[in-house]
Length: 380
Image (cartoon, rainbow, N blue to C red; front, side, top):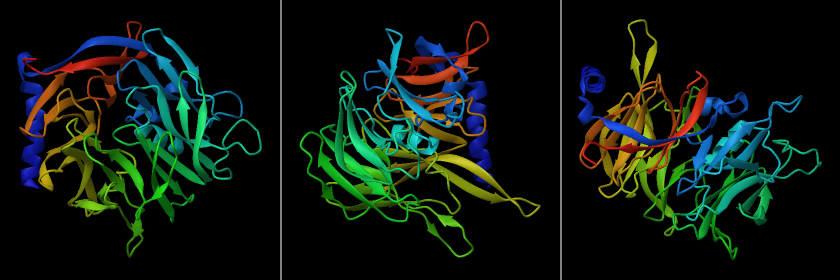
């Protein structure tokens, strides 16, 4: 506990004492739009509520319906950032925000940014919404230019779709509502031929340079009712577990906060939770970024007090933010073990996609605005 306390203190000290030339900066800021209430889904915690296309020109985000009795519907909106024009996807809104967030947490864009892989609600009773869990879901490819929908596979109670690292194939999950049983498939995107795999779970990040994905297995209940989460790296080509990642007892955050790969595909950052006993007999949760080195097959030193936001501006870096307040930003280099604070006060980060970072900050009139910027490291 003493070592952890000292480590956290060093992070805080770094953030308050770093000279301006030692801090990373956000440049090329672009205001996308003013944040209205219907765009504030879960206060936009993490990339599950908003995603940038690979080239950063389009924004896919969730908008909550706020009219009349439909205030629990969630639409998907695609926005051309430069033209400041947007349209609603021609699929029925999701009734459950968990489902909508899972869709955007996957590798939803193909590399060109022209197509989406999604699980779409099937509107059986034609009431204009997906009545979950009464109605099923369907994996689809969605062409953003034409709004053409191509169905892939069969409907199921819950369906999650994701592009693989090449964008030429899909990873599909079909499961029951309670996630007690399910199946995982791969298939070419354009000539569907389903290949069933020997394991299934919730995809939590596809490696950008290898046929491997982080897979959160269905939770198991231990004696006493405590839920045990298991996170593995699954080799899609060999259809087997490549590594089992260490997860501390009581960590139930892996389905809320998606792990992220560095651009080079070597390091996977994921949320760690360490529950420390207090004098009164209760426990205090300490959050951290745990780092798995895929090449060495072992953990790298964790970063206490910070959780991963998304890949950073270089091949081996990750953008991190403070868990408790989410108002402190840092860039961590897994290869060199170095951390830079980001000189960016008064903003709330949403996600990082390598080249760009999304965040919310007060506008000129005091109202929150959504922005896109780039992080530059000292000396770059």
